[in-house]
Image (cartoon, rainbow, N blue to C red; front, side, top):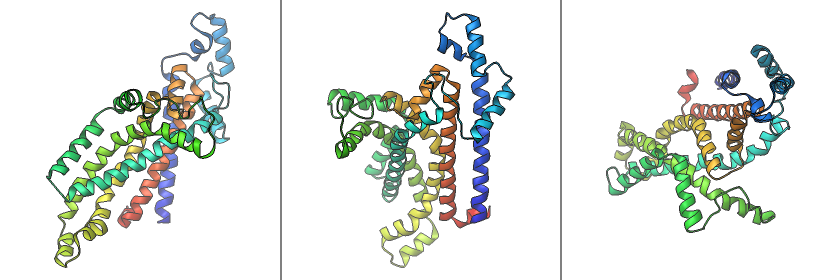
Length: 320
């Protein structure tokens, strides 16, 4: 197990390094000039050249990359062009909001998907099974931003049950438990949008895996011995069927951050997704690279945890 962990950690580090290199190359070779955002459209070319020199954008690309990697090793992600603040400080201020949104969404989607998948697999082709599957297909087929807009129109504007923007009520200065309740109140709609969109794929995968496992010989033997049906389902079939769900969960982490980006824009949620969107519009290279680096680290860490969970659930994986 230790050897497996060391191999996976080393591979994760290589993936992060590759992501940093590709992101740097794509950002600096993409069309666009940060000086147009900093100085406006009508600035003199001399002023643009001066700003490029101050920002180091006039140096060869390989030199810029070497300097960037050297600074990252020292823990310096650079200074934002737009905010004039260290990128690391800006991102650290936004990460809690993103984790507060994407973390519960990830867990709730997986838990609901597993439970509903197990439940429908025990009642195949019933009306309830078909209804849940239809809802699941609709959930992961509809774009998450469209789900968010529907939730805003229905629960925010028509019924006025939940706030539709921000993370807290800017008109009030709540503290203690009232602040927690206020944040949860604002979290409800964006969290619901991500959960609705993410649960469907887990339902379908868990259902198909459960149907396959329930037809296995050891399950029939357990039933023949008189073991209770739900004990067989929960103690034997569900753990084996959940291995495929772990694989899906690791693959969906990057997708979840993409979905969080759109949800944060719809609901004006102050997370790293919204920050990334603003950095793209402002051509803020250091902030953009810092956001991509943060996402790469979070996704790689989540995949590493998923690999370790898979290895614990199935010891055969450690021998690969």
